[in-house]
Image 1 (cartoon, rainbow, N blue to C red):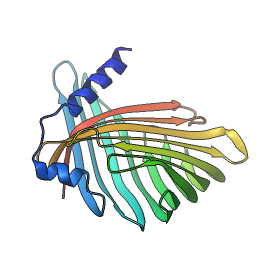
Image 2: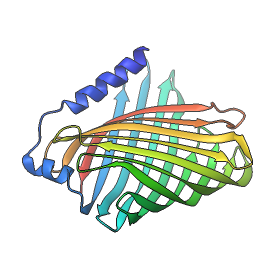
Image 3: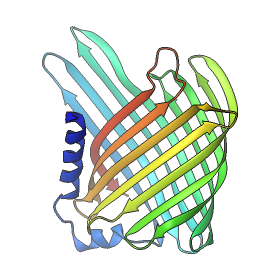
Image 4: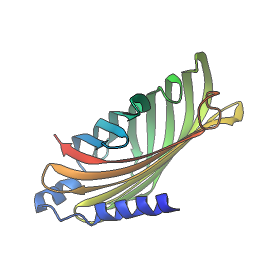
Length: 250
């Protein structure tokens, strides 16, 4: 319960960050164009134990009205701790992803979604997914959007030294809200079960807040939750990450 309250408090602080210049607010609600942002964060401690955690990502997203939207990026996380001169890696993962939506009507779209994941701690040498889909916007205006999409997806993976591939289904939801002139909330959820065995599935959720500080700099706080119903023998089902850092719009 304390961890949940801490996360909510951090998100609330991000939303209430100082107002940025009017130009940043105008860019935040701009619909017809693409932006690229570099995100990074670093945490270090020293004393009875030494820890270091770093994350970085590059994301491009945007929309052309009547044509469609794109979101694509790469991200990585690394963390290690040293206790009594013994070093241990706590986090080491990387992911590349892309989602392209082609407008069919003002409320409907066709999509193509793909990703590649590496996670040393979860013993995932690679996990790649690719598949088409159809979707619809339940809400879509200048301040808010809520979309649902579904379709087949194919999974290729090597986990704990064993390779596998299978046909899966993909169900996804994404919500974004321009909470204030300078603060934006983004939330997403993805469920990917194996088509022939629904007991084997991947569930990924994310919620984050980004608050503009000036024209190019923003504060980001993101919570990610990844659940694997059939992890490697020595790995946990669930991985939760709280990421805080800065974003720089290029």
